[in-house]
Image (cartoon, rainbow, N blue to C red):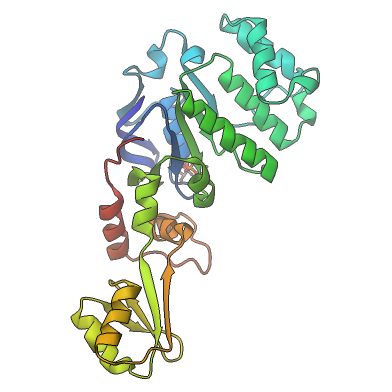
Length: 324
Ligand SMILES: Nc1ncnc2c1ncn2[C@@H]1O[C@H](COP(=O)(O)OP(=O)(O)OP(=O)(O)O)[C@@H](O)[C@H]1O
């Protein structure tokens, strides 16, 4: 279990991490999600004792990383896949790491097999593809058979096969009871991999919730209605608690009530409907809405959420979210 309490990191004027508190529990994959510059890497570096918090704490099983007696056997991490010796063969790189930590040669062969690099163990990582470097970095992370695994953006730059591999590896690690924290800026990836989500923006916690709860909160339905009786129907729906906005052409966009309710209200008052289409916001849209106001570099066309929207979404999504 990783416990983050009031974790804050300032680099000069920049507050990279701003009073973060959350737990990462064993047995599930926790997705650490946020736009570029949200503070994910800084948080992971503090968990690993590579940076000192300005205030607050990050502990693993109740201890700071620096106080762990055998860190490599307790925590494995992949922060930067390029950070390997380019001229030492993959096998020798792992062997040197193993020897320095009292780990035997057999484990080196095991992890090489586990990540699918057994055949290229004699080759230098300088010539490896990004995917192979990621696999080597993961092999190094797993060398000590650690109970806690941290992977920073492990799918970045990988092809679909590599992405599938990371996904099944992390799920396997969690099902073995390990604590797995996986960072990404891609909601689509986390939706397929994570059980639990910790969403950050500008160093602050935006959501700490089970994936299922996030999906349910995201699924805010808009009902598209076309009817010759737009004016009376809009009035009746508003009476029933709906919010009604004009859409394209003669459409009405109805939120706050279900498609069935719209149909029932129209039927009860003899109003003819030409169209009744419930539409759900995608997970990606919900994530963008949640983080939009906090993106460092919002891309053209991505509408940042208004403060009121962000507040409302945060309030509904910041739940304790029991681990499955
Ligand atoms: N060593 C540093 N010195 C100064 N500023 C830093 C340093 N490390 C990070 N930052 C700043 O802190 C903020 C958070 O960066 P961080 O890398 O933790 O975010 P991130 O969520 O991991 O982003 P990305 O997805 O782009 O990797 C950014 O504004 C970044 O520029």
